[in-house]
Image (cartoon, rainbow over all chains, first blue to last red; front, side, top):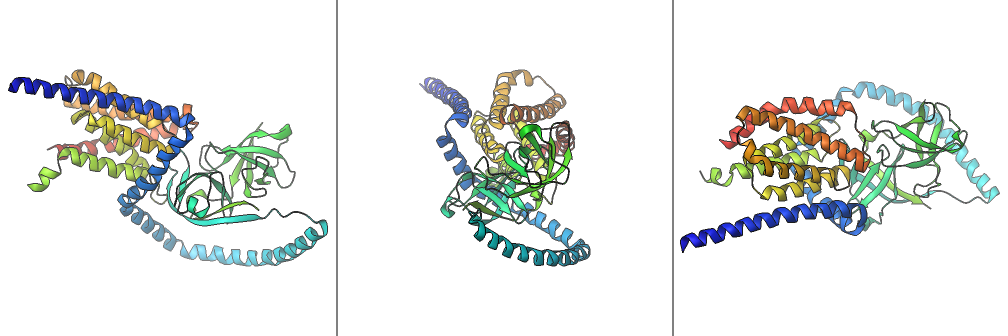
Length: 273
Length: 161
């Protein structure tokens, strides 16, 4: 009797084991398949991961975060004197620019009224701060502390004081994920300010530069030209600062973004007004 | 006595896995390479855990961690999930052969397997997700895993004992 019971329970364990293994493997293949086709299921899984697992990982990694802040503070303290000198010089330079900007802004308003031009100003949806970043390995993604409860939707643009940061790729009630401009999977349609040369750029893969993947009419810009969003793809608003042309090769060019992706603290989510 | 009964090697390895996973998915700009180190350490721990504490529940663990790593690091499911499950499946099939190896041979197998997993993940991400990598990245992975390997094995042995 006892032997028969042992044999039966061994059989049940083996069945449970086999069923678990087969279900996990099947589920994995379905997930991989659905990640390319079914956006609802995959988005739900991503939302659960971002909403529940992400906060837990942040708590677990809190000591390291504190250490990182400490290293940052030490670095800042060490460079205090040097930075102060640079900032003083920058204040003098900016004061000159401020006077010019005020004059230009007045002129601009008057000219717009005269031309009856439409306004292409940006509408601020939300200013949010960075929670954590996942940009060291694989994709260049950051997480911010505002989600669809703050009216943030997918494909909205993220900017900071220096220019375009990226676009929203996923939103949960209180958090959003932003794909940075430096990611090779994010394409942006841009134009140069001086010549109006239209092109499409993506991240170059080195986390520092953007590279052109298409140039309209094969016109090449000059080194130092400032590049802004063209707004033609209707994902990014027009005239957001992107970067400066830093290198030109035979049939492509490189852009050095204005945004320092390593020191993003706050971003603004904007849409065209 | 009570603690040693609660914190069995199985529980401790799971704690290590979750801790290294948490650090691997959070980037720290001011402490360079820290999440690459923990990313590799996570793989090392997983492979060691698989070799010395194999249980079919590791398919579920592999499924969870693989999916989460994919979502957090790539935003597309596939690379880590399939690689981890593939490695567990291969191990489950070959474990009888691996039992014949000496401890040194198993250690070398673990080291090689970790590097193979890392390269497969990079290749999968390149082919199916368009995430580029360069040769330097593979060299980094190799060097970091080389330096992490012996201290990690020492730690894992301590846990096992």
